[in-house]
Amino acid sequence: QVHLAESGGGLVQAGDSLRLSCAASGRTLSTYGMGWFRQAPGKEREFVAGITRGGGGTNYADSVKGRFTISRDNAKNTLYLQMNNLRVEDAAVYFCGATLSLGVPASPNIYVAWGQGTQVTVSS
Image (cartoon, rainbow, N blue to C red; front, side, top):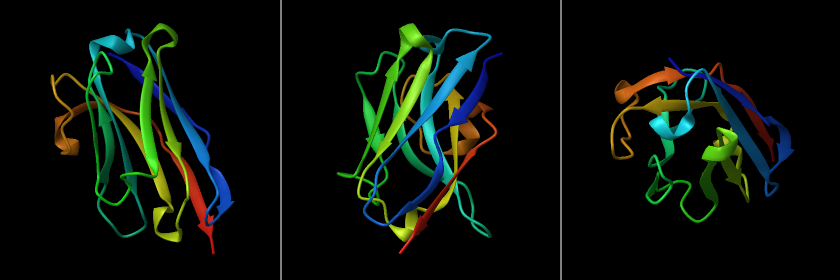
């Protein structure tokens, strides 16, 4: 079983950038498709971005297209999420998830492992 640990969250102002990281241990990252999800208070966990095992395929939620970029470095066993032009509505706890699916599913039910989350707060 893979173990995931997110980092890089923090408090920023609207328009700023952040880069989240997700470090994997226990199994090699290349075994899994990976996704970033977020959950705001009182809301369900929602898909943000996903990337296939080799990194050749990506998928984004409409709300983040053009602002966020997902990437991975399988040699470093690390997943990234570059977030630019952050908005107040992007504030949430961000989670990385691992899936055995060959694609980049948007349903959290398809993911078999999760990190503990990292808080992103965006002030206006």
